Amino acid sequence: MALDKDKMTVEQKKAILLLKSIIFHYHGLDKEEQEILDKTAEKFDAWEELKWASEFISLDYYTAFERAREYLNDVVGPLDKDIKLDFLTMVWEANNAKGYVTEMEATALLKLAKDWHVQKELMMMVRKK
Image 1 (tube, rainbow, N blue to C red):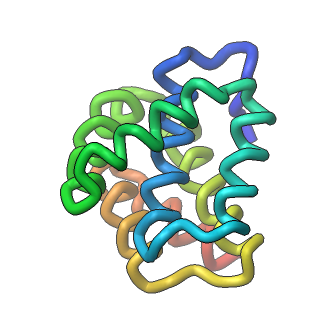
Image 2: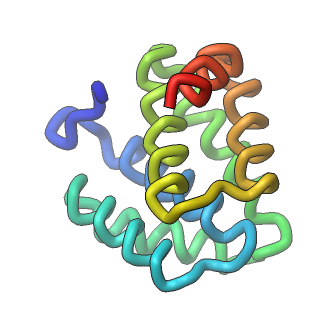
């Protein structure tokens, strides 16, 4: 994985935490998912970014995905293809770590992959795992 916490901007850390948070909130955040988010915040030294992501979602839960999608397209969209795929892979693997990926979560990841022009690469990664 090419993501290095020391080289990441605050906006990129926000994007990672928002991406994981928005996917986990699709069906209601459970304790295990919160623990995964906490571990991610720890790994990237991004506790403020996790707080920001939670507040972003809580502003309006019903529009959170579309608002997050717009934000993520602005922040992640311009990044290199490999980094975009790293973001999506990280979320896919986090979902697998909890033992399942719901259809809604997978669809949301596919929408973002399509926005970021890495849909084919995401599908290839999923097939390999």
